[in-house]
Length: 109
Length: 344
Image 1: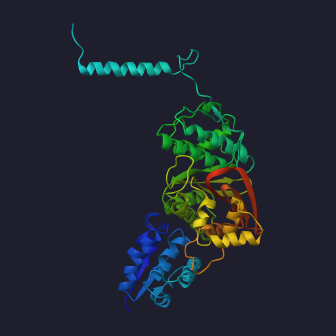
Image 2 (image 1 turned 180 degrees about the vertical axis):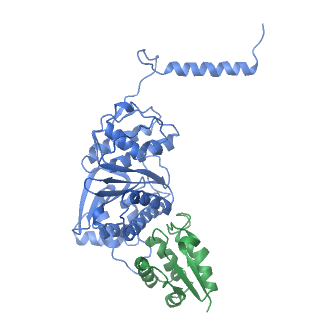
Image 3 (image 1 turned 120 degrees about the vertical axis):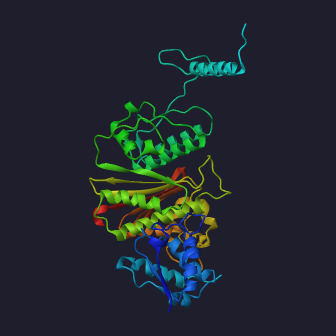
């Protein structure tokens, strides 16, 4: 099984913020389209490391993870099977729980 | 007789213009030239505080805004200020910043040495001189119990601005638990994103010339009672004006009808906070308001929102909201988190 790791703070930005590209440079849309989606298409497993960033607003997380469902790239089950958050410190559990909930709540258009 | 060259004629013209311009300015002890009227200074109120003197502060700010609509000269006298709260300071600094951008002129402090010394220190500490690129910044000698964080302004949802504010807080309170500052970052990030996405719609009504998408961040600490505040202010159309575009607006109206409350701004904001916290599957885009509450609930603090004529204060420790309606609306939206640092 091929896997890759994305460390958001090192590969993208320590300061993710905003939903769309028009909101700012390090938006959810930019991360999803430029980093996460290509990795998900190429690899069986994508390990996401959340430490190092100052935080993740709901609009950012929803656009990244909810957006993958809403835009029809993956089903909820497919996406959850491909994502791996196990290598994250305990203080990031809050965000992992939040983004998994956002995946569950997202509905394809 | 030698004739003047075109360059010499031009030099003479310019020199004469500058001499006439100099003569038009009134000099101390001299009668002002004919036709020149010294502008009457606009006096700031003694108590610049949105909590204790909202109407006084807004009257002053609105008078300021009216003058900036014209090409008249403007002199603002800050000497009367005896009390300066961070909320009024942020709104006023934003107005000065807007004036500077819109008019494209360099502002100068007027009779700075006659200002109350504590007020002068606070204005200097909060970065008013840097924000407005003013000259004559005073040396800060005595730091009182209240410290202001320098203003930060921006027009993008730039996480680095939120991080900058949080790092300044951490400098003063190194005991910060990252778990809480993470959520402060989230709240600030959401507030900035809300501004970019909702506050300045293309078809919005703005009574004054605005700087598109602009917001201002600031904070303060009161060392005597270990209390911190973090604030965000924008000069957009306000939350009540943007709510009708929200997918959950019908639920907001339903809630108001259920509670037999009218559609005044304070009630709309309160209802939007209530409705926004109950997530629905079909609405992936909210107003971002619930995120604002999350931090205050985590630290058992307070969230205050002033937008339009409405003010809502959410006290997380007692899970209670209170509302107020002001006669004079605020131009934009003001958000403030207040929390006791030793509870973190």
